[in-house]
Length: 104
Image 1 (cartoon, rainbow, N blue to C red):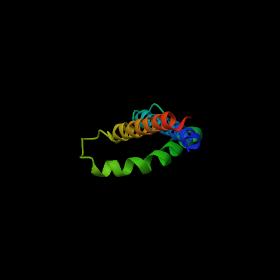
Image 2 (cartoon, rainbow, N blue to C red; image 1 turned 90 degrees about the horizontal axis):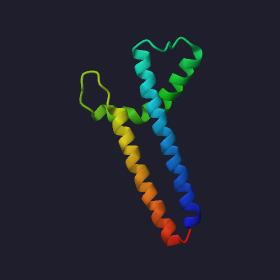
Image 3 (cartoon, one colour; image 1 turned 90 degrees about the vertical axis):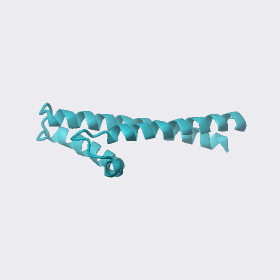
Image 4 (cartoon, rainbow, N blue to C red; image 1 turned 180 degrees about the vertical axis):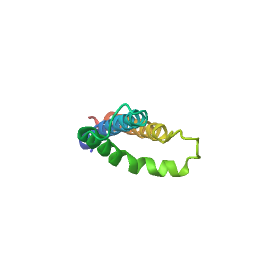
């Protein structure tokens, strides 16, 4: 059982790490767009921004619904990243316990 679950948990951990980077890139790009450093009329930039928005917005939207208005400051990416770090830590501990008990 551990032979299959430990690598699967490692893949899930890598996916969480990649998603965390996507959230960070999305936040940085939103700042660059707000300060007119990046022009979204460029097709390549628009494609990247649209892709990042489509993969991060479904996870950020529920957090934004529960957050109070902080006057234009959006801390929902930080809360989501902290939640992802928590899930990643739980998965790592579970994989470690499986590896120790399963003889992996």
